[in-house]
Image (cartoon, rainbow, N blue to C red; front, side):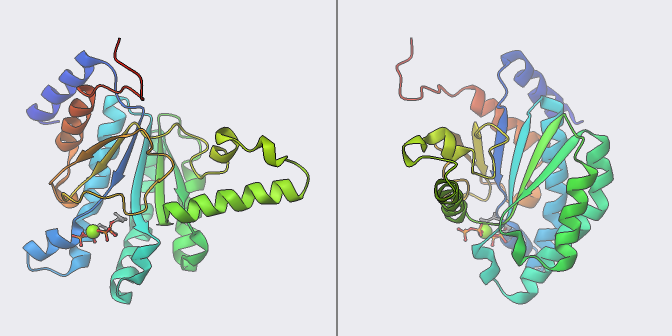
Length: 249
Ligand code: IPE
Ligand code: IPE
Ligand code: MG
């Protein structure tokens, strides 16, 4: 750990309240590569070490849940060469990291329209789920082939099916019922949503779940996002006044 990282971590610990759940829109790989006159997949590859860094940072600072937006439903519309490079990197990441993640107590969950994945990518997803299922220190949600609106439509369909089967009455549908049909039913909503590369939009990520998340836009491009950058975001979060519509006493 560098001096900056340990100073920031000490500051986080003094303050106390760490976000339980951090969600990150990992953006800016393409621009990072372009700045280096390299093809876009070079940026995606470099982004893998930032994933490692934020996992370490969450483990170190006591964050319980980390949600990473790795590939959106809309990203399928990118050129075929870029899509296949991203899928190969996913397989490579899992092959390289699954054992370490399991050893560190990280439990990996993967969410999205996984039917669209290639057989090799789907097998990698199954493998990381299986090998890390015992992890109890950090829950890592990976969103792949994911769209927030599609997740909401899926939840509505699941509710409709339960009503049709007579397991649920329409008047019983409330926020808790709806929430329990989302991919993230197993974890609390994100407290902090980070987006890198300066873009100020949600891009269809976790539309329901971020209702009361604190937003943190970092100008850093994803491959340069490191543990110190994560700790800066947590420090910033600790200075926020979360009112949830009420007034501060
Ligand atoms: C984020 O980086 C990775 C994915 C969306 C898969 P981008 O590829 O979007 O990089 P920019 O935004 O073009 O710089
Ligand atoms: C959002 O980034 C998706 C991921 C980070 C996986 P994009 O780069 O695809 O989003 P837009 O196109 O800037 O909205
Ligand atoms: Mg982008």
